View 1 (cartoon, rainbow, N blue to C red):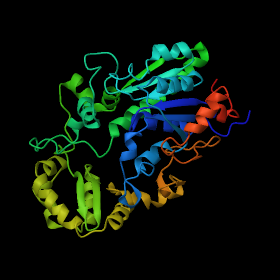
View 2: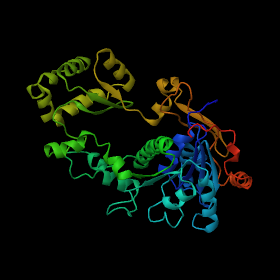
View 3: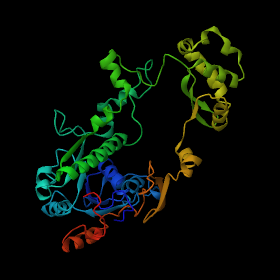
View 4: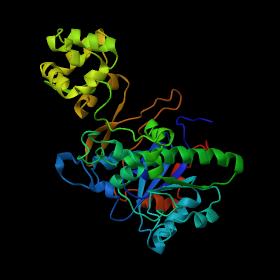
Length: 403
């Protein structure tokens, strides 16, 4: 059996909007799975989010949508109607997996309840990506990405930290909680497919994004049940230097909490007299007097370039890390050498570059096979295929690798 993609032959239906369902199914599509994305006639909300080429809004040119939906086919259906649900059931009948992030409050209304779909296809794995799961007092709550960061505990850990308690918690740009939910949805869905190989039947996988976020709190969670302590944000710390500094052309992170690292940094700075003061004698005293010490270090850092300082630190085994901007990432020699970035000719948007695979498979590699679908682009193709007996007829040559 020829297998040029790891998940060749896997058939997935995707419903929902924005990131979590789309990114989960993208992870499958990029490894060869056939994915049909079902959008409402007005389109996935991701189509309304930029960036757009020339800053002109275009449903078929959203950078976010293109990134999330290459390698998929797209159809439109209003799942609130009988006709739309009929199309969905026809697609799901021959699918291996349904991935959706439809609100638990609307699942029944849109015909996405697992019990009904499983009767038509007992081998179906349905993956529901939800804010808080389908059990518990918050199961029907709606939530934005900001809400999920806060509910999961990460927002509390992200901010100015102790000593700046008047400042609020922070979240990073974008829909990072949804991406966490998507990753867990893909892993759990793949696990359910492996289980199906033994049992012959599918199952319902429910992902709680709140739990996904809470699962990556690392030791900051264990501090509380073990020691009754609330872990600090990345603010004031008991040992220093451990902080960001602004150079003349960007930012750099300094981690010199060991004595030998501090002495090497002082030597790199030209052994200034202030470094010999008693109030900076060890890492604890340097932390107690950090307000003064940071200003002195910052004054020197402001005269340096990030790259020169980084390489000077490397040669002396001083832990310094450039803070990459998006331009730095795109121009990174290392990422380019690894072939990280992918470029595709996207109709309506032209040549589009975005992050590629974060991994490499030696025998069945990640691959871009097609651009993201225009709104309703494959309606006719899928409907004609259904007329021939199966909506997946266009993939008739695909292998049955996962069955």
